[in-house]
Structure formats: structure tokens, C-alpha cells
Image (cartoon, rainbow, N blue to C red; front, side, top):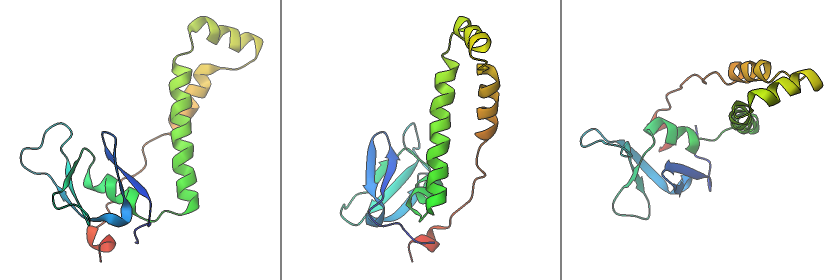
Length: 131
């Protein structure tokens, strides 16, 4: 597995860093609190950046993903946004859409939820990326 150069990796709470400038990740074991999950070591800073995301989540974003995987991730995000929007449709409008346009909001909500079942977690060993 390789690091995708020049990819911006989200570290949480509005922090981003270039994937090829990250040289190490260390999960925070002690004094771990809200927003303190991983120390991210970079080539340009002496002290690590404290990230609110897990080591594995950061590693997944750093790794090279195929175009298909990136498109699938974007599609999942799009479906999630659509699901949020459908959840805000008032009952009156749901009934009107069902009778006038034959659009069943509840059916589409269930279908999207089924399509968005969590992806299986895959552990990526750091050594594979930082060799």
C-alpha cells in the first residue's frame, strides 16, 4: 500500500495535512479526551498535531485508493446528504409526493439506509505505508 502524494488528509476539527508530509501516527493512550485520539507527526513540525480522528481513519485517507473506491466514497456521502434531506420532508409533503408524483419518501429512505450500511473496517498496518 502506498501513500497518495498531495492528498489532503482530514485530521478533525478543521485540520488538514498533506498525506506525503505525514511521517508517523501515534494513538493517544493517556490523557485522551474529546478531540484527542491520535498524535500526527509531520516532516515540517517538531511537535505532533493532535487529531480527533483515529489512527486507522487517517491511514485509510492517506492510502492510495482506486478511482472506483473514491467514487464509491463520494456516492456514499451524497446518499447520506440525500437521506438527511429526506428526513426533513414534512408529513404533509410526503403524502402529497406519494399521491401526486408517486414518490414514496419512506421507501427511498429505507433503500438509502440499506445502501449505506457501514463499510467493513480494515486495519492498515502503518509499516506498510511508512516504509
